[in-house]
Amino acid sequence: MTDRLRGKRVLLTGGVANIGLEILQAFLAEGATVTLVDIDATRGEALERELAPRVRFIRTDLTDASQIAAAVDAAQDWMGGLDTLVLNAGIQLSGAIDELPVEKWDLTFTINVRANYLLVRAALPHLKAAGKASVVMMSSLAGKRGGPGITAYSASKAAVIGMTNSFALELAPHGIRVNAVCPGWIDTPFNKPIIDFMGGRGAQDTLVARAVPLGRQASPAEVAPMFVFLASDEASYITAQAINIDGGAYN
Image 1 (tube, rainbow, N blue to C red):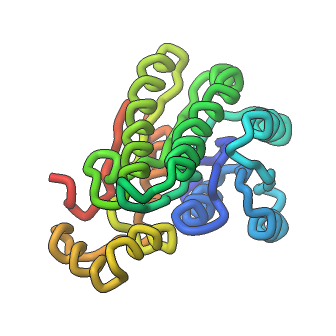
Image 2: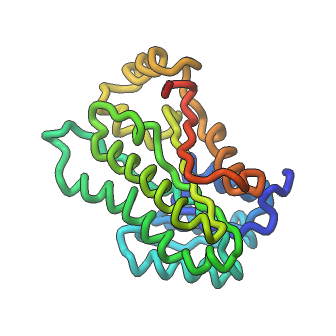
């Protein structure tokens, strides 16, 4: 623990499992106070009990604009301010172009894009009041380089990169930095839909061996430190970036 985030008041979405849980643990290890926003009440409430008093859980349906606004206000009230948004929540729904239901396309954009916009919009008065603030959004290598079966996911993550750039330029005069993290192949259950579409873990391992210069997937613990860095004062001159963590796959 180096206290790089001591005093940071953080709202983290999607932090009860996978990469999000690693981000939560890394932020706590660096001294942050975290409001955890997720739809999974069972896991979220268990984490609050385990990690109190530095974690509070707010069950939030990110398809509901009113719940998003209420969660931001509750986080601000509990922490006495808000200077860091970590927008990690997302979904991956895979399928061929002519087979993916339009409803799944719409849900992908509702969670991966619209919710992030609404969270930043609701938090903006608090971020401005903080004097200097950081927003870190979860994108994906898929947002820079698509692939079969992930059209909706790739398009949504490309939109996150576009939002990152626009937010960063608009909010820079207020001292608010905005960046995105773009993981490649990460060994997590989140990727099960695309693994199933590819034909199973064996097909995925073959692709990773061919496409990733480091020859393997990353663990979630190898992604979380980038979120810590971008939220910290060490990254005070970094904004409007979409940073890859991909073992060299995007080159």
